[in-house]
Amino acid sequence: KYVELSPIIHKVIGNLQINTNVHHITFTPLTENDYILGDRSKIEQVFTNVISNAIKYSPNGGDIHVKMYEKEGQLTVDVEDHGLGIPEEALTKVFSKFYRIDNSDRRKIGGTGLGLAIVQEIMRSHEGEVNVSSKYGEGSIFTLTFPIVEGKRKETDTEKRNIHSGYKIFVIEDD
Ligand code: ATP
Ligand code: MG
Image 1: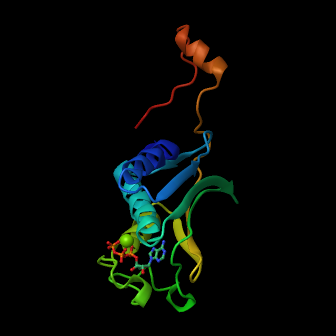
Image 2: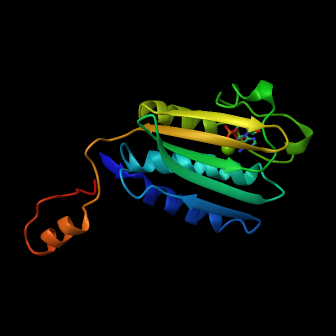
């Protein structure tokens, strides 16, 4: 099924922003060509897990930027925080089931270590990827990439007018 990514991310941010007032979450969407082939609720799960980590592992607050762009034929979303960061030796492990970083800076932060393993599994099942770059003590960027769906786009103003005048020349099915 085709799903439009920007509204899903908007919704997830709206839900998560309610639970924090020390973080300001900004979102730069792509409003054109932001369709992917996938499962709406699983994609929601991906962004919920990654953005809630950004909140949880930034105990001192700070801005969280969610930025969407096209890169090398992929629809790409960066989730950037200015939190605890991830030590270099842990970068490859954070996607493993039940892996949690056991450092004094996050001993009191709860979790099961499953969130990112689920994200990786869902991204792979969508022929996408999740990657991370981070500087310990400064923050992290989780990058999600999806294959772009060609030829799927929003109707232009002209096309919209034609639809309203009865000539349905360009149809977007929602699901
Ligand atoms: P769960 O998501 O299952 O409730 P969790 O958050 O511990 O538990 P993951 O989301 O899989 O598990 O993350 C694994 C580990 O990676 C975390 O324990 C945390 O130490 C580290 N981590 C994840 N996201 C970030 C982030 N944005 N900044 C710093 N560390 C992170
Ligand atoms: Mg988590």
